[in-house]
Every structure is written in C-alpha cells, then in structure tokens.
Length: 268
Image: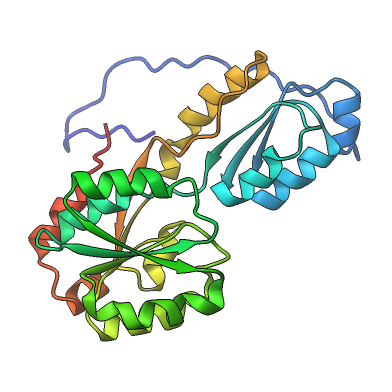
C-alpha cells in the first residue's frame, strides 16, 4: 500500500487492519496426500495444469484450478472419480478479442479465425459476437500446429485480421513464429493468444487476464467450493488489454486507436 501526499503536507489518520488468522502447523516433510488424509485441508488452489493434475491424483478435497487453459481444465473435469472441481481459465474469453479488433480496426470487415477440430465450445459465442460487431468470420479449420500456417497462407490476402485460437495444440512456440512472420509481412494484424506473452512475441493485441485482480475471483469461487458447491469453470472476470506498440507502429495503427483499445476494459 502506498500513501502519498503533496510535498510538505503531513499525513494524519489511523490505519487499522485485521490480524491474520494463524495458519495450522504442518509437520516437516508432510506430503499433500498426508495432509489430505489427516483432514488438514478444506480445499486446494492449484496454479497451472500440471500442478492441478498432480493435486487431483493426491487429494479429493475441493480443487480450484487457476492459470490453466480451458483445454487443460477439460481433462480434469472428465475424471468422474474426482471430488468437486472448478476453475478460472488462463485465457480471457475469446470473443472479447473481437471487441478489441473493432476498436483498433474500425474499418475491418473480415476476420480469419483458426478453428481446431472438432469445433471448440468457444466458437458459437464467437460467431454471435462477430455478427453483433458486423464482422464476417472466415473459419479456417486446422488439426494441429503443423497445419496452422499452411492453412492460413492461401486465405490471408482476403483477411483484414487474424484471430488466434486459445489452443496450445494449434498455436504454440513452434507454430507462432512462422505465422507471425507471414501475417506481419503481409500487413495483416493478429489478435488473441492465451496470455500477454503472445503479444510480446509479435501478436498485435490481446485481451488477457488481469492477474493483479484475480485473487478476488479466486476467493469467491473457493468459498463456494469449500461449502459444498461446485461452480462451473469460468473465464477471468478482470481483464486488461495488451498491445505490442512496435507491431502497431509497423502496421500503421493510429495512436488514437491504441488509446481507444486500452480503454475498453478500465479498472474500477
């Protein structure tokens, strides 16, 4: 917490806080399975897909998965023998990237989207949002990361922008670089990706989770889980816009459009 006053003006007042509750003592060398068997845990928050899978194997107390993609969470939910599970997905809701594209590219008409097979659950809401924003959605089917750039290449000249799917089997460190080289060379902006790291790599912009505000959503869902309820997995409520300024300049995106995009999801 930072308390700031103009130079020369004293600060007056009282700051009060609630004392933290003492944490239960955990024996040295205790494993997660030991803690579960001893009844020490009411719930677990697991950060990341691999950590969540390990926690699910060791313990059946309510589990909240954070920083795992919808794709990763689906495999955990498929385990019928597991106790209550909920999740806050790693990625922001994909359709929000269409709002971002409209803010940055007001004259754009056709958006190409790489669609994994079989069709993912996020595709139907994306179609609805595209109609609302008056985008023509060009759905490009892909089966894996090797086919992503190959499938996009013959369609690229007809597109005003490309939307990446939140799917690591299609867009990952192997497929992203050639895809971005191709789109930037042809002057076609790319949106989306699981996290802001995609924007750092050369994606023009993406709506991503605002991790500084994530704990509030974690607390709410964890409270439901430990009371015997299992909320359905959700996208992060708090989001922000990440923009690659270098790519924006390269593509000739106006500074006013970038400012408009950044203001789409203001902090309260």
